[in-house]
Every structure is written in C-alpha cells, then in structure tokens.
Length: 120
Length: 281
Image 1 (spheres, chains in turn purple, red):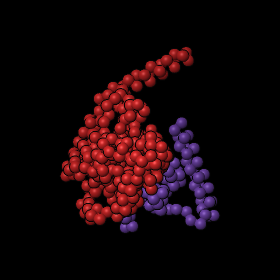
Image 2: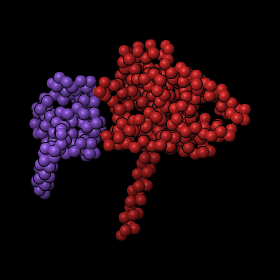
Image 3: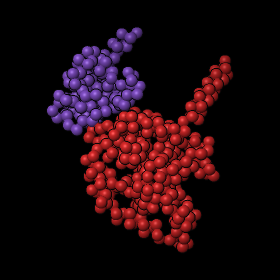
Image 4: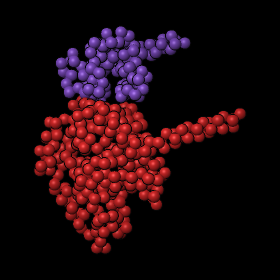
C-alpha cells in the first residue's frame, strides 16, 4: 500500500517536474533552490538558520540550528525533506514552519530547497 | 445507536471540559506570571526582571544605549503635545475626560484592561475613553485611528508613568476572559503556524534574522510606541501586525478576541512600572 502510495507520489512529482520544466521554457526565470531558500516571502531559511558555508548568507537568525554538514546529519535525504515539509511531526514543539503541510512552498519548491540544503 | 454515539461524545466533551476547568482553576494569573518569570530568569540569569520593560533592548546593550540617546529628546514629543491638547479640550457640554475617568485619569492606566462585570466583558483604557465620550454626547473614536485615540492615549498614559501594572482577574467570568486570552496567546495559527508564545516565550531573547525577539513579560507597559521615532503604533496595532506576519487573519481591533488577549498579555506584566511613550525600532 505504502509502495503504491510512494509510486503515485513519485509519478505525481515526476508529472509536476515535467510540467515545471515545460513551463520553465516559457517563464523568463525560475527560482533556484538557493533563491527560494533566501527569499523572504518563500523559504526565508535565514530568518532562523545560519549557513556557515555560504558566504552571502548574511544576517542569519539563531532560532534553529546552523545548516551545515547536512548530508552527514541527514544520510537519508527523504528525512531532510520531511523535516522541511513538516518539522512538527518529529518534534511537536518545533518552531519551524510546516512548509509543505501548510502550502507555504509547493512540492517542487520543497524539492529544490531540499537539494540546496542537502548540499550545505 | 446514533443516540448512543452522541451521548458518548457529549460525555467525552464534558469530561474534557472538566479536565480543562480543573487545569485552569489552578493556573492563576499570578502563577502564570511567576512561571514565565522563572522560565526567563533561568534562561537569562543576567537580565534583571525590572529590565524586561525594555523588551528586546534588555538583551542588547548597544541597542539600549541608542534607545537612551533617542529618549533624551524624543522625536515624538509633538504628538504627545497634540494628545495633551485633545485631553484638555472640553466636550461640547463643557466637561472633560478628567471629569468622567476614575481619579481624574491619573495613575489609572495600569488597571487596564479591566473586566467590567456589568458589561460582562474586558474593557481597555481606550474603551473607557470612548465610553466617556459617548456619555458626554460625543461620537466614539475609531479605535485603530492613530491620529485621534492613538495620540490621546499616548498623552493619557504619560499621566500614569511609573504606575505599577495591576491588572486584576477576580471573578469567574473575568477568569474565563483571561483564559480565552491565554489560549489565543499559546495557540498556533496562521499559515506559518506560530503562536504568540513561539516568538515571545520559546524564542524570546533569540535573533530572528537580525532582530531580537522580546519576552512577553514587560511587553504591555509602554504603549503606544513610536516606531522609527514618530510612527505611532498601539498595542492592538502591534497584535494585528503579528497576526499578519504569521499569515493569519487578524481579529478586528477591540473585538473580544483582541481585548481578551490584551487582558492576559497585560497581566503578565503585573508588578512592572508603566511608561509612555517610548521609541522602538
């Protein structure tokens, strides 16, 4: 059942990605994972997290832990994505915005942000 | 069958209600305040309780020095003067605000918001001013208007400078309003899923971007504030701003939700001195 669900999700995501890239051809510019992460009305990650390895990550907040060595901290990238999607699942008192659950970012945007954060 | 389920649900809800009732009966406003003070003094042992009236400035000596310098010649003095003129101008019937407010309007701001038993609801100082106007045949002010009630209340509150915040919660109905305000304060809401407490309890004293978050204790004693020097912002304006920032629809100003929130919020500053008005960034 779960596999089926995953399969459907993958297909759906695939479809979104395809549509996304089809649209990208038309759209003048499409935000990168880093841009979404930095944008104050999108990810706004820097409001709470420092990114010590990113030189232009200025005026970062200290509410959440610094985003560094992420692939070591999250060997399973899906867990990192799940954390961005809704951090209150792992810790109900987390201050972190449930970006996916509350639709602050689209699924495609979360994928891009996950890729960017995972590389830090 | 259906009836049974409904009965079960009702019993369950009643049980839950009783459990909540028992829980809230023990958490008096004084106890809530003491719990918060203990939480902050444990987390920030170097910040003195009396310095909580400075909000985030208490955590940053540089910003506090800048504040002190600005407050030597407050850039908002002309607005306080405008408020004084409003205060001193008699109504058409010849009476003044001082005639209809308790103690001539002096040293009273720390008693507000108060629970009005006759009305069965929380009354803010601004409500009391409007009641005064209506009783004297004047039209009430729109409570979110900085140019009228804002300026007037800024002056009025200078008449209570140094008064110790003393919000009282004495009857069961008052307690219910207080609890409603407390729930609003601690309930997560908006697309960003924040409660007031997320920033002003859990993360108070921490930087959000480059801004320090102020602790709930001491927040209610110095309104309105003049942001950037001359932009008058009332306490409920600030609440609206917070609701918008977390992408929630702000309740209307002077609504029961806002007034109950102000009631709880102000009680958490009980024991601290009032000051009007202050500069904030």
